[in-house]
Image 1 (cartoon, one colour):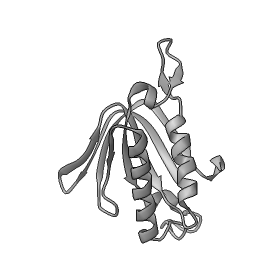
Image 2 (cartoon, rainbow, N blue to C red; image 1 turned 180 degrees about the vertical axis):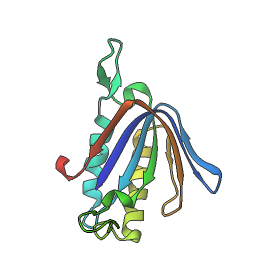
Image 3 (tube, rainbow, N blue to C red; image 1 turned 60 degrees about the vertical axis):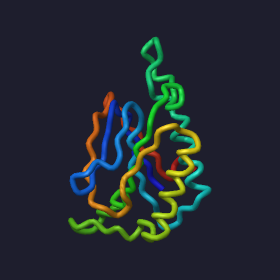
Image 4 (cartoon, rainbow, N blue to C red; image 1 turned 180 degrees about the horizontal axis):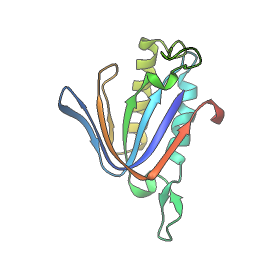
Length: 148
């Protein structure tokens, strides 16, 4: 599993010129599901993401979590995080999860996040999406199998 977490002032996602998700201060999270990922692995990633203290406190130190700032989430499925570019110039995606399994895990992540965060928006699995964001910092964190 891979999460690319961007601290944003605001972000949105559109499909076919229609905005389907929009947030204010919070995280835009690109989510890649791998072939061996499970709900247990997703739970660890969710806990780590929600616990990240990367918002500034009154002293300007990155010491506050998403919950501390009443932050919002925009979750976007992105299998291209599993691009393998070792051979040639055309990426291979053989390590990305099976689309049915990946969609189930993506929806599981969305549902679990909705249990903990008041505003959780999402993209459309498998659709061509346009994502707009204002990265605040910029501040980007990548979570991958190293957290397990």
